[in-house]
Image (tube, rainbow, N blue to C red; front, side):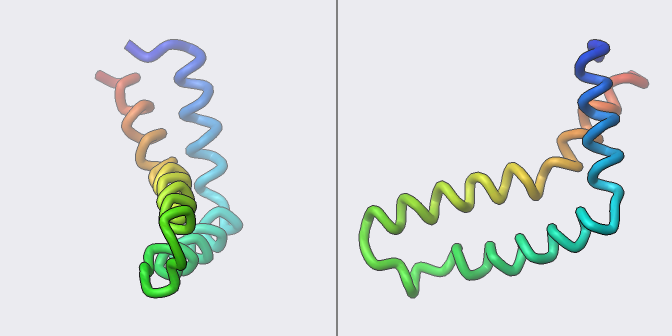
Length: 77
């Protein structure tokens, strides 16, 4: 069962991720992800850990719409 708070969050995220600006930003993030994911320029373990953190955050942002859709779908279940 979807709580009112969860529904508000899902609707807000779906509205936000439906904008042209969001789509443009995602394209930039996807390009950045390719560069960050390259170990070719990794200098040491600290840099590798930093890149891993960046990739984790990118994954959160890139999956935001999917997570909102999944949550909102629970409203109709």
